[in-house]
Amino acid sequence: MKTNIIDIAYLVSAIMFIYGLKRLQSPATARKGNQLAAMGMFVAVVATLFVQSILTIEVMIIGLVVGGGFGAFLAKRVEMTGMPELVAAFNGFGGIASALVAGAEIARFMAPNAADLMGGAFMGSIDAITISLSILIGTITFTGSFVAFGKLSGRISGNPVSFPGMRFFSILFVLGAIAGMVWMGMNSGDFAAADFVNEPIVQAALGIAIVGCVLGVLLVIPIGGADMPVVVALLNSYSGLAAAATGFVLDNTALIVSGALVGASGLILTNIMCEAMNRSLFNVLIGGFGGDSDTSGPAGAASAANLTVNSTTPDDVAILLSYASKVIFVPGYGMAVAQAQHAVRELADELGKKDVDVKFAVHPVAGRMPGHMNVLLAEANVSYDLLFEMDEINGEFDTTDVAVVIGANDVVNPAARHDKASPIYGMPILNVDHAATSIVLKRSMRPGYAGIDNELFYNSNNQMLFGDAKDSITNVLNEVKAL
Image (tube, rainbow, N blue to C red):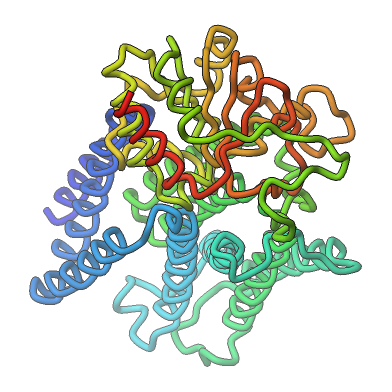
């Protein structure tokens, strides 16, 4: 009877996972899709704990209150600029949870009463290899995610970090992990009376965990800041694969299904992000691209080639926008830093009242994580009908009067089209330079996350509005209202 109830609960949760994931395809339904998937996981967890009598109702309620309260606290307190590193941290926690569950399964096999608890304490070679996979992927995800967390939060340099022989050591550790997995498979068997500490399979598991932790660092530390959105998506996939591996360890259908869905969707998203940057995943993983931008130099300084820029004022921008027929806003990470999304939405609404056709162009890798700009604009209640992906809107810049770039940099750099020496050469960009006039809001002329100069800034039809994006937009908004 219990088995039937759990199977039904897992089927319901799997349907909720799949349907919730499908609803994530559109910004208009993404929030409900996320809620549906979360409810599916809640159903699966409660069914497992309650039906199997693993925890009492009181303990489950306490866990729900503590965990839910902590999650709600983070959701309320973490600013949108901190969302990418929060996602990275969640990936890391998911990875270490999978590794710890796999380790606990080894301990359960070796418990003195394992034969009574499990109907026999024999661990087959397939069981051992599955457990080792869960430990390896989980620990790689754990340390890799927190290196990404450090890079995104500025606690670790966003520049690529490497040392002589790093790739050699990485390969060596991979071979060591494979050897540990083989060793675990060879030493599986009956552990009812085993000495836990001195058992070879336990030592191998600990070795794999250490190797996995080191590999996580070695895989992420050489990747530059410009590739962090891809890394976040990839680590999300790793956390799903770790959960799926743990599902096989526990013979848990819900974990297998949810982990496989997260793993597959993460890989698909990673591939989409790589295509948006015109770079292969291998090229991303070997690192060396992008990093911390230069923090020196005054605002409005000329480039190394001594090119000049056209500066503008909020008054002039307000006039341009008010008398335009079509305006496209291009958000970037600078908008998130300045928390200017609400002011931008107010400006868009005010322009709409003046019969200006307003749209938002979102590049796939704008920001520090996949969908970062979509989340920001959704938080500011920008209508989903106004949001357009790069492929949908790129052809409209030719008929656009004013394109307003708010804190974006590399995703609008024309060098990506023609400069073969540029590290972003071949990356699809938003055709902001095709608009009749482009206006770029930045604090200074410092380069973006890829660490390269932006040709757009020096175009004759481009104007630079220097200053904090929120203050600049607010000043423009006030001038627009006054017209």
